[in-house]
Image (cartoon, rainbow, N blue to C red):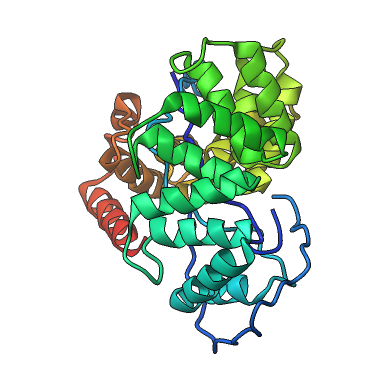
Length: 360
């Protein structure tokens, strides 16, 4: 069954303001540090809200009902930057982590600012401007959480699930996720949905999982949109609805969720829940393939090999087939279909594949 990834990305405007996997961390360009006046207390502002194949076609087998894993969360990052954010967040955004740490410590100690406490937890957890210390990160997240910061609640919940910064405590994690979700945090709602779907920490409740995913999806979380699309596709916790599934896949795809891009491309290629549009499907498969999705690479190889939705190109097809195989996505049927490719073309395709892997 398909695995959904937990997300513990802290989506705040840090000192001033309050949802996806995705799950990447950017290092902004350096800039000069501005020093704040003592005991400066800026006004709080909200940041904007922030995811079988036939003989001659790339249609996949039906996607099985997913089972998530929530024991290990990726490092959290602060996203949805507020253009009016204060000096602490400004320093963080520019990569001046030591400056952000000093300013945040001052505000946490002298002003009792929960956003500053959350920032300190973030910096300690990710070794930004200070030596990594999960215990101290958990301590600051706890203080911010007790002060009502929903992002700290999410971060601390993910630490409790993984056992970082202290002993694992899934019961506490559930309470923290529920509190954060109640305060409108879509990432917390998504992760809580995974626990209801998993059925270990909490009794399995597919309907409740679907409800929480809908909350997060409506808030624009691409991971939740993709997961809920799978629910509608399979009829998990909701009535099966191919059109709703496709709309959610489209939304998650536009937000950059690679898994959703692949599923949406396949739906368009086959005309499942949406009008058939093979050229657009191939373009989206190509985009996902370049983002290193083995499934997209395999499907792209198939459409190029058979010349459906794109001009037939067996050398290019062999290149993507070879790349997909290096990621564990073999395809015996495609091996057989491309067996007649001349040795020179086969060598060229493999060389291009190696070059692509070396440059990615």
